[in-house]
Image (tube, rainbow, N blue to C red; front, side, top):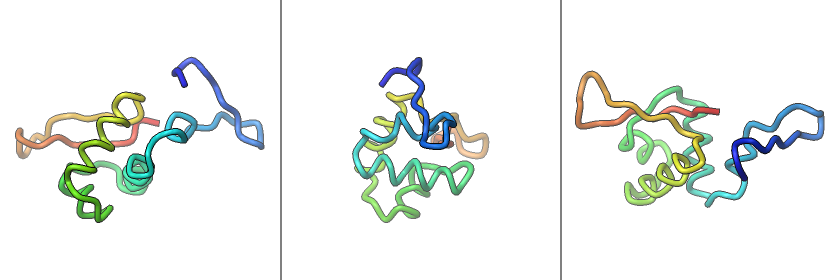
Amino acid sequence: MSTTDTVTADDGTADRWADVRDLPPSAKLVAKVLDYNDTLTQSELAEETLLPPRTVRYALSRLEEEDVVDSRFSFTDARKRLYSLGI
């Protein structure tokens, strides 16, 4: 689904989860955890979701392909990236 497509929910509002629906379950879980927690690192996501780090990396890459996740470098540790939900 492209970002120009608008899917509406049953109540007529735009469905913000439309871009996530067709993604793997791991990506949906990571998106939902980011929805509850504003910003997390990859290791924090692995800890929160109980998914292996490799699966979290894959989920984040799929979410980034759909422009659902925003990432930036951590100011406290430039080796880490901080992820937040962009929808």
